[in-house]
Amino acid sequence: MNLFNQLLEMGLIEEWVPVLDWLLNDSRFSVECGWNKQKKTSFTNKIKSQFFKDCWMTTNSKDANWETHPEMTHYVKMVDSSKPVGECFVRHIRNGIAHGRTKIIKQNENIIFEIYDYKISNTVKKQTAYIKMPIRELINIYELYMEIQNERTPVSDEIRTA
Image (cartoon, rainbow, N blue to C red; front, side):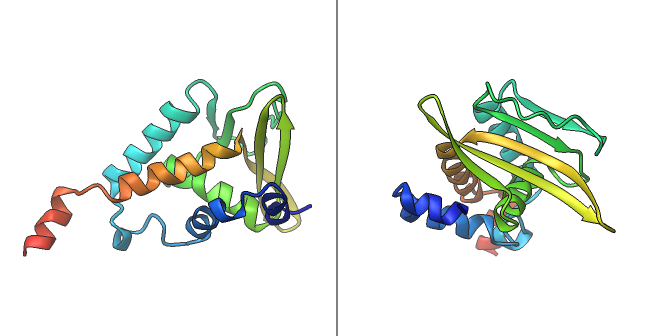
């Protein structure tokens, strides 16, 4: 069953509409939307500390061990990138959803969202991310994004008064 049908069956689709709009928007971290290096760093630091304190890993190797950690409710493993980590994290979630590589599972009392992302080139498929979190956390991450996006920065204040 695909993600959208699962959200519909769980009665969560209305709550998820703005989150999905955000995830599928390619300009979500653009300068035009008010995102600069400082905001991207703030977003990365906050999602790591608030949601994935002891379970965030990045690797340089695309041949990494991609175990799924069934006992954990929160886990992130991604291949390093030249872009800010928080931006890559959101891109991997978007890719997992857009390419149908997500699962919603029940683990104890939690509804868990699992996301897989791959880079495919010349018929070679290499995993680039595995993300696992309670489904509610993605809504919380979206809310954190909106909070940071709406923060005023000195540069944007100067533009408003000019």
